Image (cartoon, rainbow, N blue to C red; front, side, top):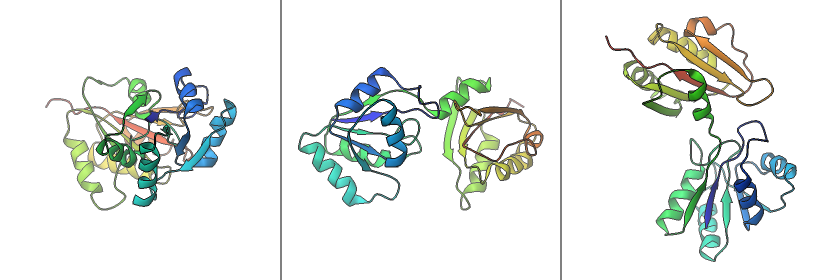
Length: 219
C-alpha cells in the first residue's frame, strides 16, 4: 500500500491522529528532505526508515519504490509541508503506483492553498489553483490568464520573486483585491490584504507565500 500522508504546513501540531498512526505502522517513509521530516518524526517519537524522494529523483529511485511496494511493503509518502502531489514531486510516484495497480490511499490534512483560500474572504465557489508560476518562459502567458479569468486564483510564490509578482500584478490587474499569506500557521504568520501596489513596500521578504487573487468581476 502507498499512503499519501499530509503533514503540517508550519505548526507541527497540525497533524491528524490517523497520520501519526500510519507513519508509525509503515515500513518506509519517502520524503523530500530527510532532515526536515526527522524533526516531525522526532516530535511524535516515530522511528522509521527514511528514503529521500524529491524533484531530482529519477526513474531508478521511482522503480525501487515500486519494487518495494510490489514486494508487499507499506510506504508512506510525505512532502516537506502539506499534501504530497500538490505542486510536489510525489505525484510521479503516485502516478507510477496507480499504473502498476498498487493500492493507493490518502490520509488527508493540511494544504497551504486551502488555508489561504479560506483566509482570503474571496468567493471560493469556483477557483483556479496554479501552483508556482514559471520563472521566465510562459510567465507572461500565465499572468494574462489570471487577468482574464472570472474565478478566484490561488498560487504559490517564492520569497525571491514575491515583490516581482506584486509589481507584475499591479501592471496587469491593478484594480483587483489580493490576499498574500506569509508563513501560514507559523509563529510569524502575516496576512496582507489590498491592491498589489499597496503591498509592495509592506511585504516582509522572508518565508513562504501563498497569493490569492479575487475573481474578475462581470463588466
